[in-house]
Image (cartoon, rainbow over all chains, first blue to last red; front, side):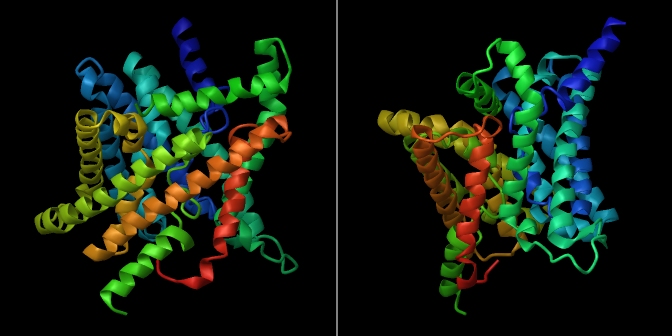
Length: 231
Length: 198
């Protein structure tokens, strides 16, 4: 009973309250670039969920045998091995998409989320729980990017999954499929989520609703998380 | 176009028209986390320029003289990341021994760099675009300079922003940083017509 609760909590925290994109602003580097087309994003996110889950599992299984001093290197190698599998699979089964994704599949290796979860969770938790945590972080990350990709493709090309859904009256908003569109769209999503959902949680936690005081506290974990995962 | 001119074009393109941060979103994590002060941004920027230039060249040599002849190109991710991690570690140890001042200025940023996506990204782009040795050197240096340029400009803007501006609660921190990055990206698009090398 208790252990199933722990699993559920690990899952819910990755998707909700500890969502890596909104709360920790981690790992947007490699995937934001491909969010201009929904199809590519789906493939990329599937690869990422696979890698986060399995590398968390592997690190957790091996955690007794990894020497503390070289653990970053070992984690990186484990992640790289899984990413190579994804890359080879993509090239075999989805060669077109693989070509469009270019270097970004390989860049999952340096995605802070994968490394961050391995470092923060898998090193100190049993394998089953680590797998759930990894999958949840991956999914929590994916749905944000899928939402962004959906909006960008719809506004930028008037289509979803390559099919034209907006009629001829729609003039493509080209900016959306270019780089600035990605930045603006992500900022917009963070604004909406942080402004409406996370605010109540923050106020309840601190007991004071003053934005000026809560703001630095909110951003500190992001910096600490990013550096903690890297140092 | 001759080799030298092409390399110059690659350099220019890497700095301005296809800035690795503002058009390819690489290196966003440290970009958002460390761009609060100009001084630290300059330190990180300098470290990135140095590491990116050298690792691009090293990875080029490894790729074309080790991986391709042995036909193990699929291991390039592991090879590149090992080269980057090992190089960063080496530089950190050397700097620590040689100069305390330099270590204080640059050393603390080096561990951050190992998993900076931009470094690995530069090496992967270089391989995919099949650059020559000289072009790779230009591309590595140009990408590093472009990244440093973006983060320093960003830190300058954010410092100003802290002094007098009321940012809506939901946008504080990363949100506003992303919007600024978007506007910078728009501004850099103004260079787009000048050169078309990718």
